[in-house]
Length: 86
Image (cartoon, rainbow, N blue to C red; front, side):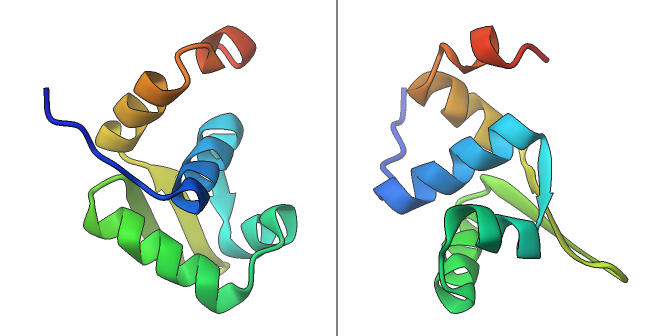
């Protein structure tokens, strides 16, 4: 099985998206207290790896985990669905 190595801050963003289901960019900035530019760099990196879906709407930027992102989160934190059942 191919492994995907990601930096810790990428993993934190993935975990936050998994726990909340979906986020908007502004709320994620507030929650994680990352600089806007840094968070956007992380999201673009995750999008490039196929782990998140960025959706631009009239209200702003919506963020979702892709199927691949959900699979990776389940590999990293198998207990997450015991805490947040789908």
